[in-house]
Length: 344
Image (cartoon, rainbow, N blue to C red; front, top):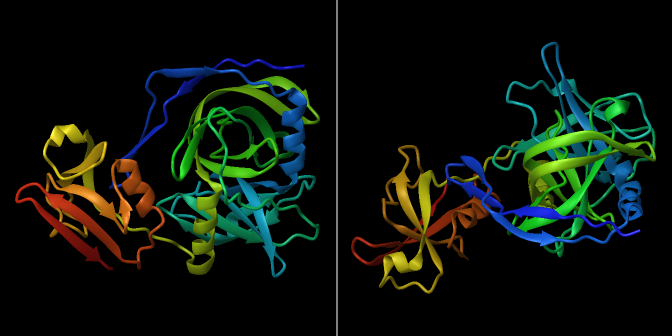
């Protein structure tokens, strides 16, 4: 039985100031898509991945917070799980627990480290039972309108491995937007395609969730309205490796505010780009405060061409604090091309 779903797609506008302020911009209706997957297709995908999905909780006398996590590997007797950094900087190492499928008792988890810029954390833990893992999908080849499932979990059997369905509605370099987010009181969810490949981890969501649609094979099959922004698995693999190697990760920041403008706005500039990024303010704390000026055009960072503010953010998201950053600008004031390399 084919299932026709009419879905309003929202433009995905992750507008970042390069000082790391974040907003979601959701403009007008873009298109209508018809899906032809059956309910069983979604169920099959869920059954193939649920054993690698866990709930990671942080419990103190005053806090009880939880986020979905993915077991992505086993190494030297330890399982490793990646999740959204749902805890603040007052955390205590010994207060993290992991809940796994088919085991009522929580497992003590050790925090390996986290990345504050991307808001990703990695934990490791031991288990007397053999657990399933799901590796990061390095080659992201999903397309606009493709069906996906989201899985999230709470710190009890009642809320273990809930699933919702949706589609991919926007794709960027490091991230993608989907409308299958399960918001509830949990911080994140795991996104899979219908072949069971792990596509990414939702770290930002605007959702209204309706629970209680159908209960199928023991899990809640809910209907969701809203969007989620997920970091691709290929990017998560890099972040997780950095965390494993270095613990707490800090990333570079330009410390400037920028705006995008059509290239015709600066008629006569020597750029063959459809848009340009102009510096509108340089923060007093910026490591580039003695180099970047208001009205500079940033056109390259570490060899990557810059034409949107998202390009700047996504480039910096993977540069560690101890690595060099080379910024190239065009200074409209005198028509000069300037390159500056910054190290910590």
